Structure formats: structure tokens, C-alpha cells
Amino acid sequence: MFENMVQGWFSENDDYSDFIRAFLMGDIKAMNIYMNKVTLEMFGNFDAGKNPSEKRPENFYHGFVLGLMVELADKYVVTSNRESGFGRYDIMLEPRSPEDNAAILEFKVQDGDERNYPIP
Image 1 (cartoon, rainbow, N blue to C red):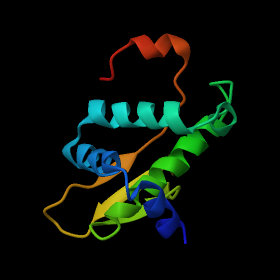
Image 2 (image 1 turned 90 degrees about the vertical axis):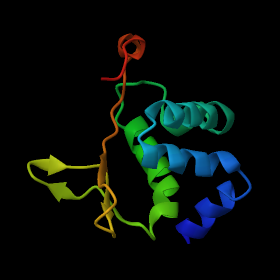
Image 3 (image 1 turned 90 degrees about the horizontal axis):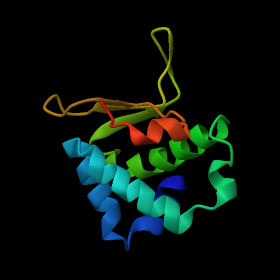
């Protein structure tokens, strides 16, 4: 049900495929541009929370990005919030083919002071 719902939202939007391509190429800048565009155009203040220290914004973006990853289900085993090592990862993509890279995604709230620093 969720797969069909998310695909319906983005089926007419070429930018959605651009996000997936950017993710697979490791192009963080293009991924951020997409997320900023969607955030400004679609999300309301109550979707992601008002206070950056709340846990809720991480959960909201986690769910949103998990929905975006639906398109990769044929290439990757996509899992969410599973225990691993000494904690939990947010989203893990395990390649179905040995030639593809695996990926682990973690979502963190960023306070206002951190926004001015480049991502390492």
C-alpha cells in the first residue's frame, strides 16, 4: 500500500528519479537540494516540528526518505530501525547484487549553529 502511495506522489516528478540517482552516485549536494526543495514546497511546520532538539523531526525525515527508497527495492533489501552492533541504524540498503555498494543512513537533528559548517 505504501509503495503504491509513494510512487503515486512522485510518478509525474522527474526530480524523484534524480534524487535516487544522486543517492546511488553519492552526490550529497544534489540530494540536499532535492530535500530542501521538497521541504519548502510540501512540508508544513507541524510535519517536522518547531524545535530542532525534538526527536520528532528525525523520525519524520526518516519516514520520508524510507518512502523514497521504495524505488530501490528491486536492487536492495531495504530495512529500517534494526539493531546492529551497539545500537540501531535508521535505514540500511543491502545490495542484492555483489557489484553494488551497501548503504547505511542515519538521521540527525542539526542545530542552527551547525548549518554553517560543511559536511565532512
